[in-house]
Length: 313
Image (cartoon, rainbow, N blue to C red; front, side, top):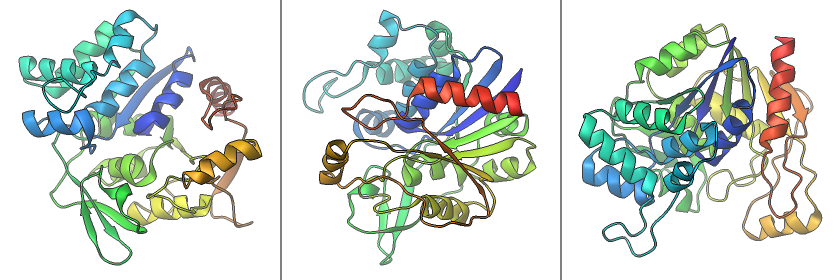
């Protein structure tokens, strides 16, 4: 049995996990950002002073062994304005209710994971209620994860003003890992917010695990505009340490011209390799979904790729 740890958040992390859960002989631990402060998650966080649960809910559903009625209900969002239940996600409300009842966010995650028959362990990167900040290239400081992509400015760094300590279980999982995957996900608002929590990088340095960074296929408007693969890795290293990603997985993008134009109209472009020499290994893989209406990673291709990595390790 190999211990596989995935660090990040957002829809990209869920895609990886949908692939990994199809592999029989691995123990999966996913370490999830809790810096989200927008939408339903943000409202519940402010009202009940609990860590952000939106990304936690996403990975729960991704790791559920079967898609049941309850799995679909966890993702259900109520219509209406931001009053009462309007705009809330049912899964978020259930997690909030269980946290209040049990007096523990970790206990709530554990109980829902049992009901969903989740394969693996889901761990918040921290159990604190935290606020992410960004310093832009002109020195402007932006408060709140949901506000950061809305500024037409280049992000210099993201940080926490208060001391944020890592979940001890997350640190232990990293230390015991055989393979660590960083990403896929929003670079500055999902991936790096996990890595800059005190204790996480020290654990990664101490771990004997093989480390891979799964680079995004497309740039993210307001966050990684015009970023290359090298820009992504540089941002990771500036926030953590040089060599955090000895192996970088780059998705070969074969999307049609028409589809790329649709993305370009929204300010998103393929993430490309610009240099010929690197201090890290570049692994090129075709991991995109073959569907033509969007550009997304394919869980099945990720599954097959990881199986190959496991055989080689």
